[in-house]
Amino acid sequence: MSVAAYTKTGSKSTAKVALDKAIFGVEVTDTELIKQSYAASKSNARTNVAHTKTRGEVRGGGRKPWRQKGTGRARFGSIRNPIWRGGGIVFGPRTKDNYTKKPTVRARRQSLRQALSLASSSGRLSVIESMPSIDKTKDLKKILDKIGFEQGLIVAEKADSPIKRFSANLPDITFTTASKLSVGDVLDSASLLIEKPAIAVITDRLKG
Image 1 (tube, rainbow, N blue to C red):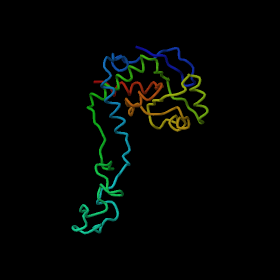
Image 2 (cartoon, helix red, strand yellow; image 1 turned 180 degrees about the vertical axis):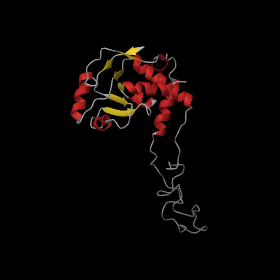
Image 3 (cartoon, rainbow, N blue to C red; image 1 turned 120 degrees about the vertical axis):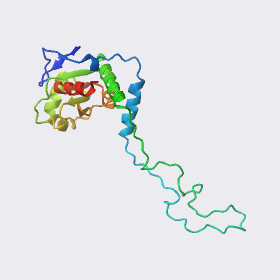
Image 4 (tube, rainbow, N blue to C red; image 1 turned 90 degrees about the vertical axis):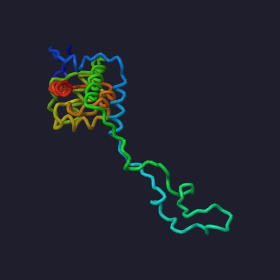
């Protein structure tokens, strides 16, 4: 299978780029695997900052609030008891909680193949022959406008591409490399613009 390509100036290329059907043309009959991989990618990207204190961490409560017997009230040893206002929290979120999920290598590869195939079949995938040599964000914006790429993900072969720096100034454009491309990246993007050398990297990565 093949897809239309663009030159580094944004013009449509006369030659089409061949895509491996085993990577970009997989028939997707069940999206459950994609769903699981997407959930795993989001869970692994989660920043665990929520932290509640237990009764042993809440300040105060070192003194018994009243004597054990004779008051007619229930016995308590600390005002930081979880059932008291201002007390500790039971089973609350902790920074040590681990939310990471690890799908198998085979599952990750197959789900990414399926995601790329869905993007290709729906016309969301485009290829640029090589990343343009630019010095300003407006130069990149001009090329993307010429292609018709207003919102989506740019996938380059190498991380040191100047496109990474300039695309950061465009609110609707994101950047990643072929070696780091994930199911979450593909599904979260309205469209994909992949550098031609990055196609080979993705193909080698997802073979087998």
